[in-house]
View 1 (tube, rainbow, N blue to C red):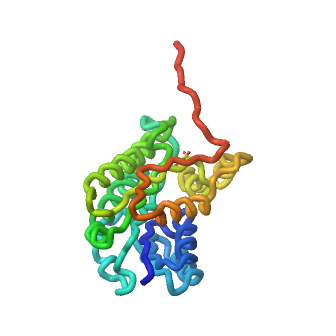
View 2 (cartoon, protein in one colour):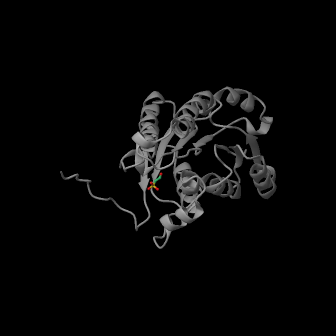
View 3 (tube, rainbow, N blue to C red):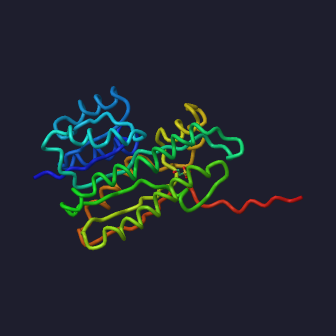
Length: 248
Ligand code: 8X3
């Protein structure tokens, strides 16, 4: 019987690349997103092994009905990939607007927890796995990103704590913590500024969505007795900046 992965935020970047990777290896994919046209395009591309679900991670009340509406053959989820997430515009908190902050927290934290909780009974039954898309920002703070980093620090610690909750169940939990990947992430973060996104990734060989899909595939297909707790990865050309020092 084919295994089934449930991917949130499947309509772009890492989500779409991971859907392609798993379908190519014979898995079934349930993929959620907010954009109907992109879901349809992916469904056309991936065919019978892909089931699209219109879902906004900011609307947890919709999760249970959406799961109950899945066709029978897609209901036994073996792997949950909590991929949906976004960053509010780069801004110090003192200069930031509240709206985009709420969107990020609702999506990256509240929606992720709610969906995971609902899917856990089935994952426990099947000794499945949860992979959470986190970020290097969980560990390394940078100016203008405190809310984003805060949400990702939550995802990391949530993942580790969930491992404790699931102790003895056979369910694996992993926090994958990447640095710079060229996807629509920065276009969203800059409010649609493609030039700013291009400039950020120029001449530095960022990681790609396919790099991450391969990593997720590797984590997911390790022998069941091996659990990757956290996995941090960066492009070779990205490392750490120094401390900021303010002088009077
Ligand atoms: C975002 C990581 O390094 O692009 O999750 O800020 S980075």
